[in-house]
Length: 337
Ligand code: NAD
Ligand code: DAU
Image 1 (cartoon, protein in one colour):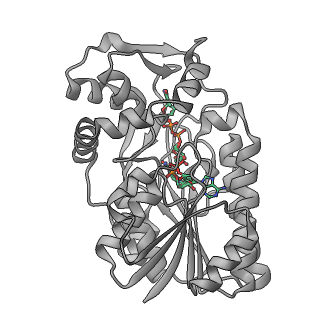
Image 2 (cartoon, helix red, strand yellow):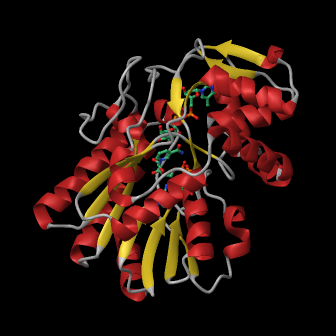
Image 3 (cartoon, helix red, strand yellow):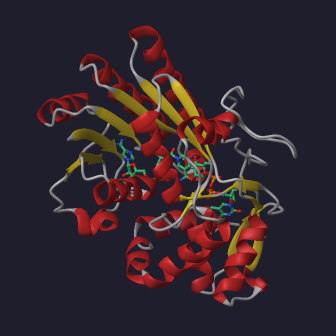
């Protein structure tokens, strides 16, 4: 049995990854370490909390002593690091915690991985480390890093640290850089669940600037299968872009959501733009497709319908999430726009 430490496994992508591992890969034992910030939610894994191949531990990736204890006690073979502060708007309001978790936290994990000579360290990075594209071209793994927000700068710094540990101490690592994910259990501060939640409640849909910004959307389950392929098959030291070839303007996606929910376009409200807003992301995923045999299995049309249905069927999850911290955050974002 392989034993892996998954960090951030109570968040959006991490919880979907843990669910996939426990459901489909019975030869893996998953220790799930999560600080349970506003974005971490054990309801995301409610049916797996007692699973024999799952151990949840509440804790911080900046706590080196705790990481060492976990690695030794559970004889961990590999780390998959999803834990992060992940929202660009929050990084613009309060960058410090992004530096703490995304850089210092990753460094802490790397130190332990190096000392304990782990078989593999998989860093879950993002396409945002490459910066912004004009109307043509796609990010490849050779595109120079040119991050624009405090979030993406912190992720790029972490990527550099991972490579430096590989170069200096022969740490066996991989880095994945995925485009925008959507799907079940995404916290409704991110565009798709935010627009679904607002439309359901007949609230304004805050579109930043002209709404013609482009993102390359990938259904979260497809991201999870890509990460597993990397963990299982990738040679050490390789970086992989992951994307769905689904470039859409924000306004296209929002109109699709409104149509599906039978809501009026009059809910759309153009608001002040995000400072430093990246215009376009697009991923060339040919390396992971050709070298590891991964490909996305869910089209955007299918994925967005599944996602909207999931939010409709899980109104209690949504209601529980959309309270407390979320409300304060939402008002600080949009109260004065
Ligand atoms: P998320 O915000 O939903 O989840 C992050 C999780 O990390 C939460 O459960 C949180 O409690 C936990 N966490 C935060 N700080 C921690 C700390 N110091 N110690 C331990 N746990 C901590 O994020 P997500 O959208 O699921 O993203 C997961 C990873 O994937 C991130 O590294 C992000 O950069 C990357 N990524 C996200 C996307 C996307 O579209 N969401 C795309 C590409 C890459
Ligand atoms: O590309 C991968 C990245 O995708 C991940 O690394 C990040 O963790 C993840 O949050 C996401 O970043 P984005 O900034 O692209 O996602 P977000 O959902 O915040 O915004 C998507 C687009 O929608 C972006 O152009 C900004 C716009 N937007 C967003 C919100 C929240 C709006 O127009 N209105 C909004 O209210």
